[in-house]
Length: 131
Image (cartoon, rainbow, N blue to C red; front, side, top):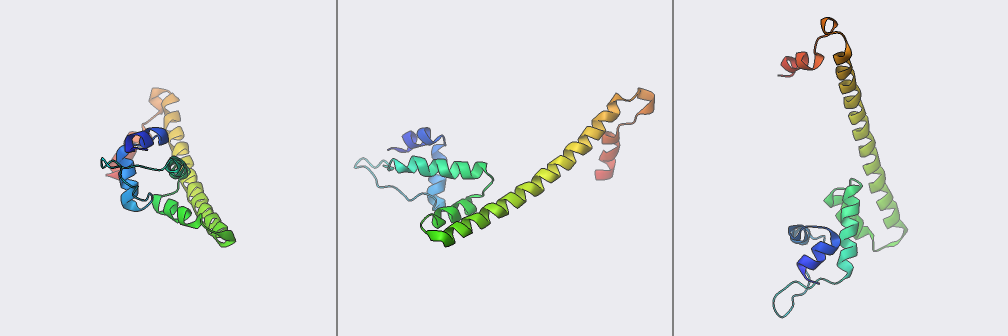
């Protein structure tokens, strides 16, 4: 399967494939007599796994670890679980941060509903403090 065909099937850019090869996530495929990369069909599933792991918040380094863990046994399962628990804790922290930002912005926007004489723009007043 040629590069553009693989990229299309997996929903990635051709440069992404080359980048993944340079990072070692994909092994460099054999070449056709004409010099084109000839990826095995299983590469589509591998790319979909990588993209799905990224959607779940895993970094490419963590994806690489997960790919190496794929080859074996209960210890690998425990290591994969540990990575997932770490990712989950990180996402929980990020969600909490986003919720705090959401609540702060909601409060700032709510002041806009007050009569003009009773309001000040807390958002604009906060800007000089941040500078």
